[in-house]
Amino acid sequence: MNRFRTLALGLAVLTLAAAVQAQPVTLSGIRFDEAADVRGARLQLNGAGVRYKAVFKVYAAGLYLPKKAASPEEVLAMPGAKRISITMLREIDSSEFGKMFARGMEDNMDRSAFSRLVPGVLRMSQIFSDHKRLHPGDAILIDWVPGTGAVVTVKGVPQGEPFKEPEFFNALLRIWIGQNPADWKLKDALLGKAAAAGQGA
Figure 1: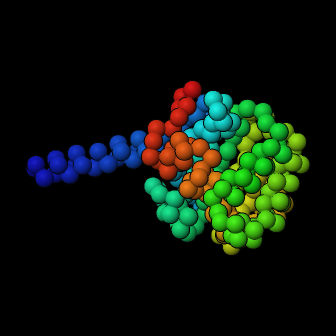
Figure 2: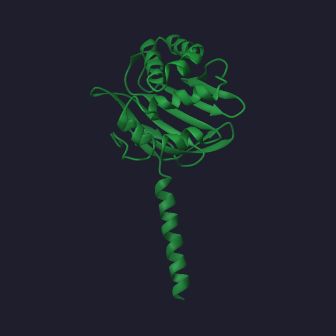
Figure 3: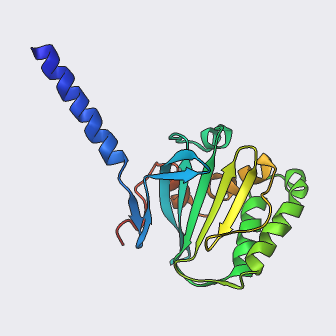
């Protein structure tokens, strides 16, 4: 009897732990669901946090993966679909936002590797420039779809052809989880290492 009671208790604890992990995360009013569907692939929220510039909140970001990962190496090497979800928290000039992306990529790559990705970087910058300004609540999705490439969606609209190179998508990921991330607290939050700053705010 004790064995069955212990087994039942163990199952109850596991069920409770799974339910806790499956809870959506809300950051500065932005909700990140516990799961996302990317072209038929079910991904789970690995972590979410807020990008700060000085004392100002710029955007909330969530990282979705096929399974949990706690290190940049795990994230970059993991096969399958992936997603970075970004929702703006303040108004920003889109050209400046594109420059932030380019700087973030360059800061986390050696010069020769970055030079090979310059055409993609310029195209990404142009995507944001075409939108003029980003406003609070505007959403950006960057999805890695195996066999297709990196699909960029801004305000619900896919932006041209996918970026085919896996190296380009990984360079984008390094903006947030590389050796010189845009925001160290956001890096920790995306990797599930720290309480997400701004939760419930």
